[in-house]
Each structure stands twice: as structure tokens, then as C-alpha cells.
Length: 490
Ligand code: C2O
Ligand code: CU
Ligand code: CU
View 1: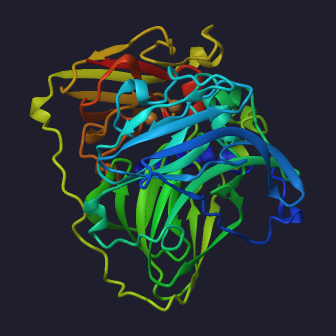
View 2 (view 1 turned 45 degrees about the vertical axis):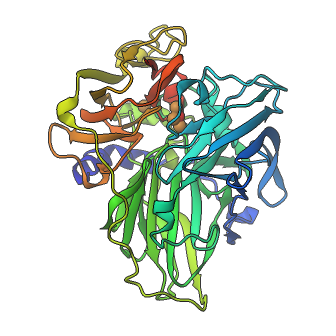
């Protein structure tokens, strides 16, 4: 990881000096805003929940309303909690003037329930899938996935957290008081002009992905979390369109990494920093028993397809000035009257049977392309953003997989790091760049960063016959502009 970072650091330094940063402190952004906790929509008692997809206004800065989208609110959505074993009846009503979909990112369910580009909800319509929850406890997310508008709808606010819980997790004694010592944290970067949300556009945005110079957590700028002075569980969700975060604490404290997209790790891993790409989740346990405040910070954003002179073109339009290190969230521990020993981290978390690599019956190769030819416009409308040279076509099934089979997919990406996400499965990283996977690659995953070739071991247990599953880059502008394919499972 260090190698990749230093390789790219030279290029990133160019962008970090761009001069269009606009101070927002004069807009009341200098003071702290209490971290908002999304309302908990607990589907356990009634085994059902309802979402209204709606538009509204949100004042990220006082007196500066912005037009935004949300679920049951004006920006983002409630935290939905479902329980393993339940069949959950869902009603999603689209109150927008545009089509939308709601994709349950990370949920292992059949293709026609997935909420991808094929499950369009027209304006005024209600979609009623019943979701069979049959997977271990995990932090998932839900978001718009209507082809061509995913990036804009998510940027405007259509995302939320979805938690799966089960007996095994609840028996571990992990912090579990929602909003107190168990916090969902949706991290996003957004661009503001005079305190109002703006949506950068243009070719640089299509190439680099839409970034912003301001970091939001759960929709708040300059957020401050008051936490009890004990062990706290952070469920990090990268709900940004394009930015990859390199997260650590300002005081270099270590923390325990306990979960990935697919759920809890087998063992807690002590770390001092963690990388989180768009679509990825990371669950952490952080010890605040010493009562000292600390900030979660991110290193500079080094992920760029632009080299040398091309970088100069990116200033302004591509908001490459948004690459600076940033404070993500400040924590202030408060006496809670029930401090627990700092050693109370369970070492053994989850047991799971990995797919067996020797059972793999097929190997497929995916190359996420962004060729120079495409950059100048190769006529597919997206500017060379393809997979294996083919831009997304909703009428073409790219791969056909046998239900219940195990395969190895070898995925690599051109010019920059791309978070590859595959619907309907959790996979393991077998190799990275021909060698051992990174420490941070471990666990059941649904999204991993590729540039160098990465081998993914995948078992396909969910059917996708009447509607296919997607695989795509989770830089949402890449996805919308063609870096996506679809596969059936039968
Ligand atoms: Cu989170 Cu296909 O997406
Ligand atoms: Cu997904
Ligand atoms: Cu990409």
C-alpha cells in the first residue's frame, strides 16, 4: 500500500496546490455541528419497512438551503435494521419526478429483488419486494442505481445504511446501543459554493469521479460526536461518489478492525489506519476510556488518472483541489458512568467457511478500461470507460454463471485505482498483483480496489435469471458512463 501511495504522491502534489479553495468558515462552518444519527427504522418487530424517495432542501450551512434528495427525509435516509432469518416486506414509493431504484448493496438476494438498473420505480409508483435475509450480521448500504443517474442521485442524497443483525453477533457483547456506542458513519465529500451544494460536471468529473472539498458525515459538515468514554463501534460506510479515504486518528491511536462489507472478521485486527473506497464498509472498535478527544482524519486523495500536464486541465472543473488531507469527524468522550475495561475486545468474532479455491470451475478476466483514446472521446458517449472494451449495455448479458458454482475472477484497472463491486455475492481476495493479498483485503467482501490484477474467489449462490446482477466500478461516474457489466446466474 505504501508503494502505491508514494508512486502516486508526485502527481497528487500538483493538484493539492490548486488555488480555488473557498473558505467556508465565514458561513458558520467553523463551529462544530453535533453528529446527526439517522433515525433507526427497525424492521424486526413488523418484518416490514417503507421508504419514500423524496426531494427537499437541506441547510448544510445555516441559512443556505440546497436542493437535495432523501429517503423519508430531505438528505440521506434512515438506518434500516433487519434480522437474519426474516422475510422483510418492503414498500418503496417514488415521490420524485424522475425514475429511481433502490439497490440493497451487499444483501445476498435473488436478482429481481436487487434494486439494480432493471428494477426501475417510475414517478408515483411503489415497488414491493420481499427480502429474504439469510446472511450473517453486517453493515450494508442502500442507494439509487438507476442507470445514467446513479451518480447524481447519490450525490444529491439517495443513500443510507442497512444493518443485518443475528444471534451470533448479539452474543459477542460488542457495543450495540444504536447512536450511542454503535454509530453508523456515512462519509461523503461534497462541493459547496457560498455554502450551497453544487454538482461539479464536465469531462474531468467523468474521468476522475465527482469529488468535493468538504467532508460530510451523516450529512453534517464539521461534525462532532459526543461518545461515552468506553469502547465504541464505528460502522464506516464510504458513501462518496469517488473518493478513497485513508483513515486514521489524529493522535495515531490504534483501533480494532472487526468487520468488512460481508460482516465480521474471524479475528479483530489492530490497525492504525484503514483504506475505504466508495461502496466499502469497515467496522471498527475504538477505545475512548482515556477520555481524550481525537479526530478521525483522512490522508490526501492520491487516486487520479491525470498525469503531468493533464492535471492542469483538471483544476476547477474536476475539483482536483479537493485532494487535500481533511478532518472527517471529531470525537469527544464524555463520562458515561459505565466505563468498561479497555481489554474488552472479543478476539474471536465470526466463523465462516470460505469457498474452496480448488473447486473453482472457471476463470474470467475483467479489465476496467479508461483508454487514452477514450479520453479524447471515442464515440461511445462515455469517453472510453468500459469493461473489456465494452461500454455497459442494459440489453446485453456479459457473463453467464452456473448457480452454486465457484469461480475465480481476475480483475484489473487502467490508469487509476477502481473499486470493483459485484452484486449478489461475497468474495475473498486470493492474490493481489500476483502475490499475497494486503492485510486490508481479508474477510468476505463485495467491493475491493483494483489496479494491479486481483484474483477474487467467488461462489455464486443467488439466482439471477429474470433479472441479471451487475458488476461495476463503484466510482459512480465511471459506472454511469459505461464501466459496468451484467451477469446472469442460473
Ligand atoms: Cu453500491 Cu451496484 O452498487
Ligand atoms: Cu451492490
Ligand atoms: Cu473506475
